[in-house]
Amino acid sequence: MYSTKNKTAIRNYIAFVLLLLNVNLLSCKQPEIKETEKQSVPQSQVEKNDTADYKIELVAENLYVPWSIVFTDPGRMLFTERNGSLRIIKNGNLIDKPLKVFEDVSSKGEEGLMGLVTDPDYRNNKFIYLSYAYAKNDDLKVKVVRYTDNDTELSEEKVIIDDLPAERYHAGCRIKFGPDGKLYITTGDAGKRELAQVKNSLFGKILRINPDGSVPADNPFPDNPVWSYGHRNPQGIDWYPGTDILFSTEHGPSGFDGPGGGDEVNIIVKGGNYGWPVISHRETGDGMISPVLEFTPAIAPAAGMFYRSGNIKQFRNNFFFGCLRGNGIMRAVIDEKDPPKIISCDKLKGIDFGRIREVTEGPDGAIYFSTSNRDGRGTVRKGDDKIYRIKAE
Image 1 (spheres, rainbow, N blue to C red):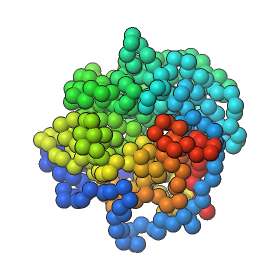
Image 2 (cartoon, rainbow, N blue to C red):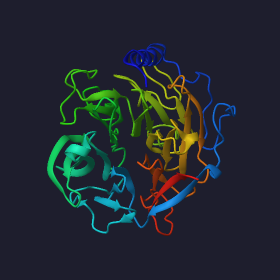
Image 3 (cartoon, rainbow, N blue to C red):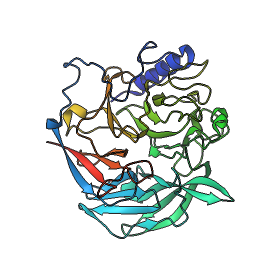
Image 4 (spheres, rainbow, N blue to C red):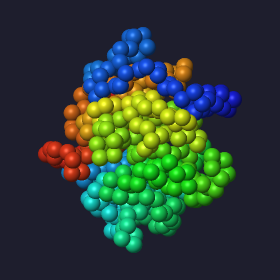
């Protein structure tokens, strides 16, 4: 674990290097990382990535765009389907009846029932949080709601934050609790990219709020939930284990709003400006932070997570994120002596199931991931969509 003093030193180091000097954490001359390109890593630094070290098992099938997965206990998984159903897998069995169907959800494009997370004190309070898009006054909005999970039903709805921007495209909306106990929420630019640079707008941001929806006193901008800005459509967030170093995945432009490609992995700092739409790809700008990894052609990075378990020992403390357009899971190996530094990034072997959206760690030490082939952009395979797990061999 890192001490408070070390955490502060790391945070200040990142902010100093990125915000003031505006250089890349890896190297300002590092080439673009292509979809299938692998950085060379000495064998002493990272164990061989080989499918012989792990196996892949099917968990559930005949699903519809599973977007987020959480575990409430070792035998119970909850997951969202983008068209509005919150589903249960209990003791390995998919329950036919959804825990809840959100009748007002809008899911005509990329939006729908999206983020899902349990409260840090779930064991005692049974709170779960969900984010979803809905129609409001001829517009689309996203809200984050909290419920009490009663095992077979939900009760005590409480709206935590509302009127987040949404559109058929670029609607966010990943939600996750940080090591500080605050709730972080990603928002897309919802087609109004110029607002990503406006600090008092919720378009194109990563937000940070208290679990009850109030704004923390130590946020970078007074009475403002914005934690970082200048984002296009961030969809994966997680913290390097034992620290407050926040990694994020983000979709780059799609041609109509800039040159194709430019998908990103960023390290998020308090009050940081990540450039959209002023800069993209590996461009730099005064006071703007460039990505630590950039992918051209596009891979469409989705959920991101750090693997904390030692069950698959060569994966410990690695950063994984699903690829929609890239059809796979990317594995980034982090320098444990210098966590902001990425040693290598490569597509994980043995993952050939189409578009991959959610990637998360289960209480059993397995890595769970979902396909997204029924989202209108993939090739539907028999039994899609599905949830799989990667287990130690």
